[in-house]
Image (cartoon, rainbow, N blue to C red; front, side, top):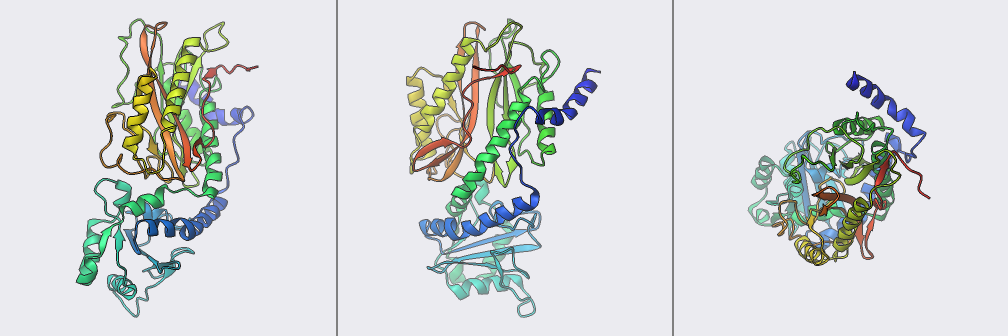
Length: 446
């Protein structure tokens, strides 16, 4: 009966919550598509030429089959293409004055890539691709092959073999990895994208606030899994998607607890949320082709309490301090491993017990760019952590600091994560960050 009643409550929540929480406007699908197509056209004129010149690449070949899309190629498809068609071949050539964008296909690929294959003249698509290449005589032909970055490794083994088999020997020697080209394209954000990204993050924050409230959580009844599935239903109800299954867990004073903190190697078990709990969630959405990744915390008030205990608020402040130490180390040209080492050193000097596992975000949740630690690699991350930071990129500032609480006779992790943007002015949070713990039930702060 409890499960049935709670299910009815969760399904009715979207209607009740709309009157209590301000949900930002979500564009209809047609408007979303139109805007994303405008971004693509603009990025091809501004972002990509600069990156191709930075990496000294004059031709980029992207090839994918339907339902086996290269992650990079998928970001270049028009909004009304939900996947590649047959074998999709895109050719990007830097003429020196502008980019020539061609589709070795029977039809245009959106407004950007123009048809460059007449099957009646040349029946073999691969031969036509080789002609397009040799006619332009590029010095370097980049393809998406990478040992260490999955997002830059989208060319299948079969397609690579076919390309090399059809290219003249002299051109085979010009084929190089497009790793840094792919990473640069994926990680770079434009000002137009960032204007909308704030709305994307604000929507995520609003959904989190709904879940961490007494509109969803009935202490003593609601479980952590109930809140997880509320989030999944709410995301779907809004017409959005989740790029990972949310996590909701609790930390509490418990004389039976041995004081150990849970491992990140497995999901936490289902727990009934009780008064006095510190409730933590890890949550992300995808909207407008952009992703969020956020971890926030709430305190469940005990009878008679009107605020969280001072010791929990102090622990939260330590987490904010660690975030500040980390973001102050962001400098263009520094590698993720260099940022990690300096931030850990300064955090430990400040008396914190830090763990940093910050990652890029954008087109993908765990996005292209420099990795700044992994939870189990605090000494640095080979290869992915050796990639440098560039301006106009977004990061999920993800970390925790361990804090011993005498009042609970145990050590907790203050786990926090907020999405941020890095440019020549430094790091700013795209839609702010959680400065204070949520309270369940909500209290009106003076």
